[in-house]
Length: 324
Image 1 (spheres, rainbow, N blue to C red):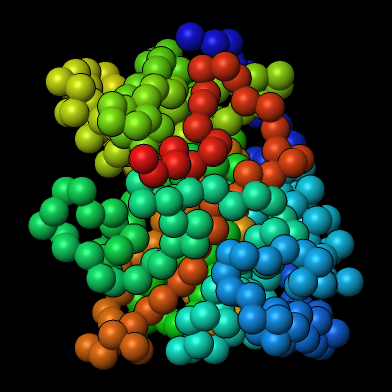
Image 2 (image 1 turned 90 degrees about the vertical axis):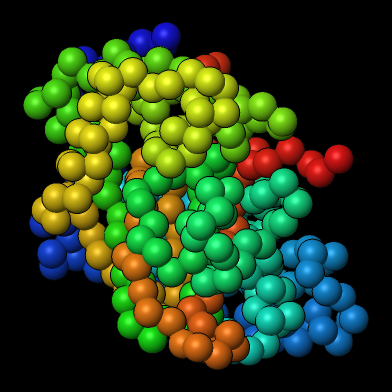
């Protein structure tokens, strides 16, 4: 077990909903020039006969938007841990074009890592899964998506289509959560620093990681409850009663409306989240019957140059291993 933070976390990573009541600096609106750059770069790639992911920044030049994206990635590590890009030119049914745009924006922010055992570099977040199968990942359904983090530095979600109704995205500060646990349930901290089993960190067998890690003065968190429970089930190592109580405390705190920011993403919005500083969720939603009209987002998992150093007991920023 690593060092346990016994004093409240301070700084810009600690926030509540009230901190952003009259503050929309977390929304970056693309200018007309930015949009023109994206469209011109898309045209250049298509004229060259290139397809995702077989091109780089040289073929998709963003002279002014590119540096702005680099600055945003710095802010994700030093600020509140989230940002919304608004105004990206996407088309509801142009899958190939949207993949090119999503991929290239990612190249200006980091290195995309694999999101599943099949090796996908862009995830399709869409209501196409089977809720009765425990291996189905909830983002493939229209069910409520519990608060969680993913095994990489930054996750980016590009909205292509909205649902018929519902599907609100929620974010909250992991440092604020930590301070609340420290103040009200400090007895749970030792078990939350203990390694637990995560199926998405290993190959055939789950890997291990704590929920909380405190390394070089920075708090880092990883909390996908459903996957931890599955990992312990796979290993035949049931979670203890105090571990389950600790998870219940996290879930209760995270559902406090004063802790979170809610947003309805519009087509052309891209949500960027620092996986170590912010947890995120999505409400359930009602979708259209026609598959081509259903809610759709494209997802990137990004490994970023400016990301914090992780403790030795906190692995898993590289996504899934390469397929065999």
